[in-house]
Image (cartoon, rainbow, N blue to C red; front, side, top):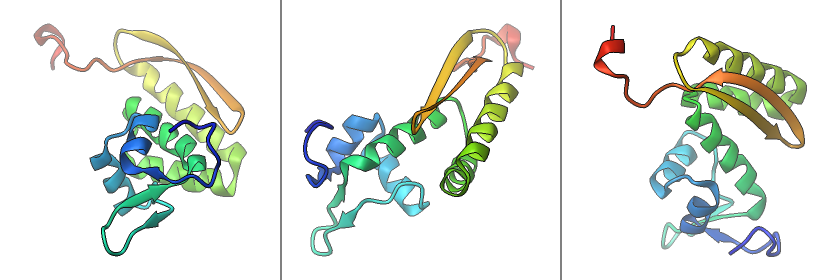
Length: 135
């Protein structure tokens, strides 16, 4: 299934996971937290179905998790985006700038949300710090 298919074509949780780079387990959690609820859930089977227009939100959540944003902060950012797009972009920019204090691995990050690009240079947090850098 691709994004070029009709907007009405439902996506299974597996297809949504593949398109967003989120796991089915994460998608279930994000539904419970209200971050990304499926368009529908079959009452008999429990199968979740997503719409193609939900993929962008899923990718945004994956990106934000990738830069270590917490789930509560993601929820706040998404809620702000629904109310005031400019404020959400500013808030995301402030978050990216705040990441700059982290050590090595300077990365150029450019986030696009509904056509609005937010460029920032941030230090990516290492997955595991060497013993010599641990406090």
